[in-house]
Length: 186
Length: 183
Image (cartoon, rainbow over the protein chains, first blue to last red):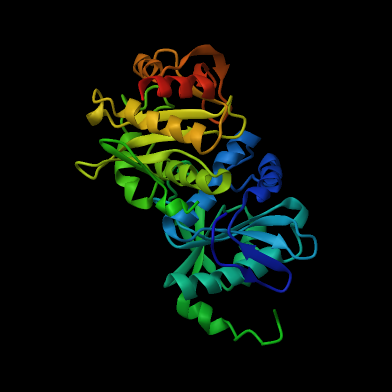
């Protein structure tokens, strides 16, 4: 298992990826509709190779997306967190969620905690989210986080043919809108 | 097992987990058309980095994966060798890739030999296979030097290999008998 930070929000736990997460990740990757904005669906063997990139990035870079666990069920519901592979256009905090977990505000809740962590621990001066122009749900998450559309960006392969926009904000903007977390919330 | 300190040593090589510092040499290997001819073809930097990350990630999720191979004399990254078993893989593999500048020195055999000792001795594998593209004579020669034999024709899972591969290999018993005889 990878050692790493564990973050709790009101309904979620964010922790580095583990092998036990893979079956639910593979379900997400098998769902063509759910994956239409994140590279398309993939079979189990290809999903495994993709899944490995996250713990690998944690180990070689010291950060990557967290697995997101729903406290109430114990189920893996998605990935959220810092993501900056080779050739990436900036410091991304991204998110992708299992379709069964959509519509509950989990992406906003998890990404909010991940952005706090990225600014505190990684020293980033800004944050972006790479979003397909037709991905309205993710655009709404970005808006709720206080990010705005910064315009088109070029991703490296295998996404170099995709039209992608960067949404984002500066560290100062993020800290300006955040209030200190009250002591009573876990 | 403290993975960050795990290291195998041979007369000329050090084998340790892949790291970010390996990336430039890893990417140069990935861009080398001749070196990658039989292992899926060239990759650009973005895909090469994801490959390095995935190779390292497998260490943490499976407990084993390929090692980065460092040439002791120069400190250079000269390849990746070791245990490999992706999802739906045809078996427990010991594989090898050495940079073209170091071909012909016996590095693949030397590194793979240390890995064969490790997979049988530490991981407790019963069998080690090597999946080799049919035209790849150089890798078949390495497999033969390890004492492995051609077993059968096989197929790799998606995402990128759809052509048949030759499966070479040997059992733990065969390897240990061979090592015992030469000790």
